[in-house]
Image (tube, rainbow, N blue to C red):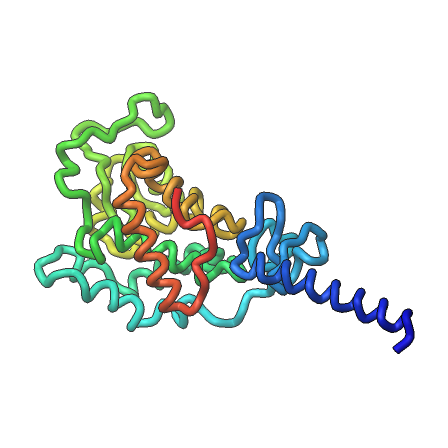
Length: 271
């Protein structure tokens, strides 16, 4: 074999080993900040590599959404599998339903449309809902009526006399400013009739989706990880070691639902 051929072979082998090493390093999409995980499972920074097929952010382009609908993902088996774990005595057993969720989600067409993150978003949403409601057992916060959720500094959404703004619905909507804003967006009197969230299942799911789309959706679609969704929902009480047990419970539901939906949970699972 000629010397030049040997050198060329060595170069090729070196390149292949480098690529293999990088692939092994990044196969779990554990790239650092401002680095994407390309469709080949390699940490990259170029716009081309971080475009179509990009597995984890920052991705410069979102892959085309599939034609699979939300109802095809949130199947009766998936939804009822959560509901079945609530005891027959739970008030939410006859309140929450897949039909109510699907009716509500029509008002939020961007939910579950995050390209490669769509199933992760659905898994994350139902993980938090499962934790907040005890598998759809609770319609409203236990002992919530004894707690003060009135923020007097909210000029736009002042508290109505005699009304309680404690947790209600799938994500336990709380505080007068959230009830007021959600009601204005959805079309019900959140300040004067907050109890509507515990009486109308479609509105109840809409409040959860309203909160999600305004506070959590962008976290998922930008690839920041499930841990940051915990921070957005209850970070002050649970994150940074404040309550590791509840964090682990949420993570457990999330990874379980990801497994059901056939999608990897990604990195940064805890806050």
